[in-house]
Length: 142
Image 1 (cartoon, rainbow, N blue to C red):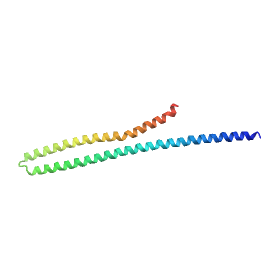
Image 2: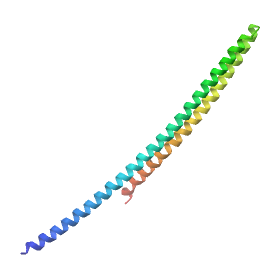
Image 3: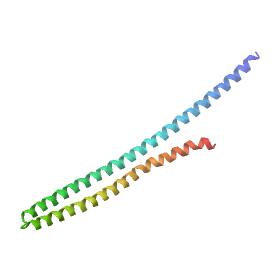
Image 4: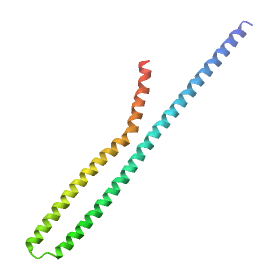
């Protein structure tokens, strides 16, 4: 009969430990799931920003191409009205300079837009990286 109370105490203690471990495991899984969902949400936000940025870059490229074609067509029409070789050279020179200036300006705008989009897309990811580092550093500090 002396073994019965010890067995009951052992069974009760074991049950409590299992319940405690199960609760901790369940909480850890819930925390991990919540944390992972936040990471996925950050990636979706970044992807959305990138998609909108690429769309805007595509629109700019299309508009620039159209503008270049129109100015090329106008220059071609102007060539038909040239009376001297010197006028032709001057026309070609001014057209080339205008095209080069336009290309450089557009490149600067595209570069600026690209940097802006990249920075905006990285913001949610950076926030998640900071949250991860904070979460990982807590057990070390505790």
